[in-house]
Image (cartoon, rainbow, N blue to C red):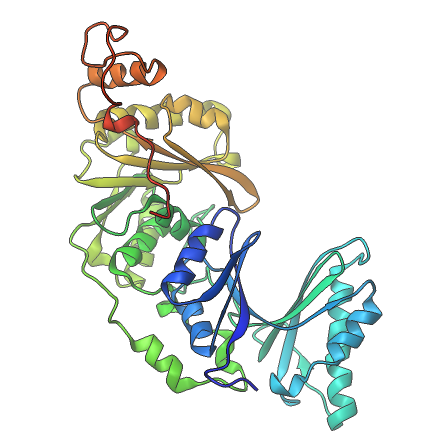
Length: 423
């Protein structure tokens, strides 16, 4: 069994495009030996770090603790190697377990068969050694076990999270296509915003971006609403240590601005209010039933982050009209803003008719999306058009009536690239 000071390997799983943000989160709470992979970040730490990563990391889906690594070309080898693990260090014969398997290999045709052989190895281990065995339980077991096979490389892990960490615990109701909480948090963290201004989502749905934004601004840990983590059932669970982590509010901070959410649907706003109230954040969020085309004024200073309809939620014709309207509102109401929009189709962004300063590839469920930043020029519409002309012709001067004459010393601020996320 592990002790509190024992250092071991861990793996944090995440969504495509959020790996660097997760690595920054891990670094901030003291993780060591951080290595970025595909939809995952590996690191080292002790049991306190394992508790902290589950409790604090906004962009982690689950935290795995590898307990065995080996090569295998067939299921019999998986069985044999899994049976070599000292399973009494992780579970007793009167408890329950469940196995999740992920397989990317030509040598293994079915991930469920791999899980079945791993289950057999654990059952036979206990039966032969103790004459009794733990039971398999799919829902809410005492131990979650994960086996990952890539080609011939096998990693056997115990899952310290249980239910995916995107299930924060604050959501009571949701719209038809709710934004994954981990994706929402990652989108906000990608902007660099940490509560230094107002936050606006004019198509807020059931309020996920607003809640995640308020939590980031206040530095409230995302695990505060969870009823349980899988590690709380581990045989070596340190309840006193986790209690200290849970009750430590020393890093929480004040938020002097507000999160403003609106939506065309009264039903969606009703859902958002219930979720926000359940999260205890109504003090920091203002909601309104309001179509985006009727937006009158944007609070300043501010940032806008939104997830407009796309995919199968809206017809192609209506989609074009919607994104044209979004571009028009951005130009007329959000001068001085950075506006971040996630969408699935290139033609959606084309209808906005503005040039993005940054593009990030993300996955929203099974949809490959782009997340784009638009730095809105502050000034008159005439100034804005001159700035756009200048961006196309670096030799132009936006301060002249004929922008092609002369050459200014530098580009206008609105056309500069956004600083990288690591700054």
